[in-house]
Image 1 (cartoon, rainbow, N blue to C red):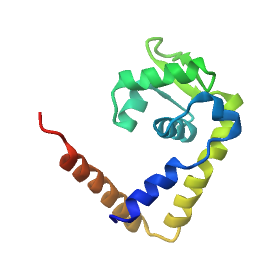
Image 2 (image 1 turned 90 degrees about the horizontal axis):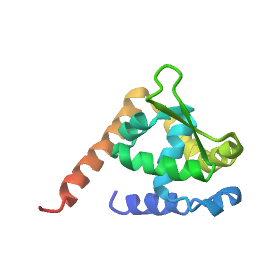
Image 3 (image 1 turned 45 degrees about the horizontal axis):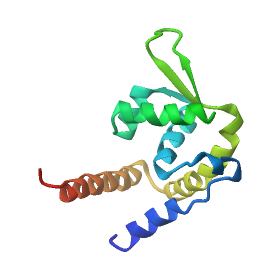
Image 4 (image 1 turned 180 degrees about the vertical axis):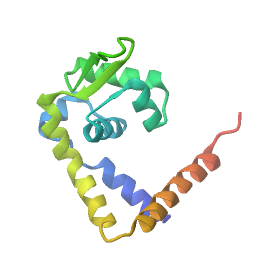
Length: 141
């Protein structure tokens, strides 16, 4: 795992950004946000923050930046005008789908022969690693 994890992270950072998105200064942090919106179709800032496990203000700043660039669209929730629904702009959906498809396809291929219990074990191990690495790398106050 010590040898594998850095290779996996480096590979994900080298995923080429599609030409139609290269002028938008997208970074790896945008990848998770876009992936959530791609697979969930739409979400509120609060929902995105919970799924990404980051502050709502951080998500709001990212969404604002991507909205100004035309990558994301924001609209008021018809049922609750205080909530804002975020979606990927139709003009960029195909490019984002193509960008993220290779990673999604790789996970589908890996998980396909596994039982639900085996998939849960893999995901559980990765989550446990994430928790432990956060604890071990926490800086003292």
